[in-house]
Image (cartoon, rainbow, N blue to C red; front, side, top):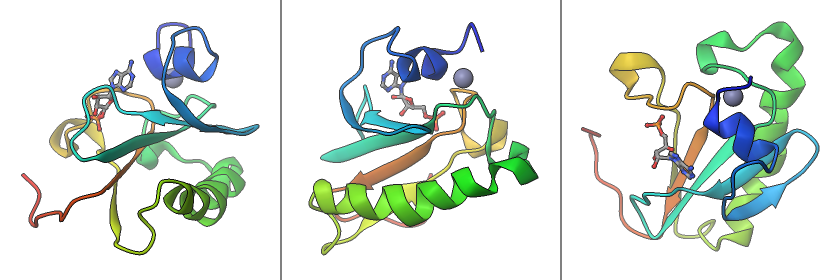
Length: 115
Ligand code: AMP
Ligand code: ZN
């Protein structure tokens, strides 16, 4: 999508602090980190949010959670102490960028419930 900041980051048109890239996904450091480790895992395909996943996205969804998350939490050193995965969705969910992204937060003790 032409006017989407995460599409532009995924295409390398806007700089980011990339921590991972493969054929279908990028992961980069959040510009405004809420924890010592705060990375966004973003599919290169423009999907507005998790509610917009289609049947054709099953492999992508599995890839994110079965391949990318375990690899990244090892790489970022948060696998043992734990971490939090957040997918803000839509207005009430607090989503500000309308391109699906998975927040990976770690490096500190998280609180519950979220705000
Ligand atoms: P959300 O509120 O769940 O939509 O999350 C959007 C996240 O994207 C926020 O945590 C922002 O700090 C982050 N963000 C926005 N623009 C950029 C950017 N250019 N590079 C890295 N992170 C960004
Ligand atoms: Zn996009």
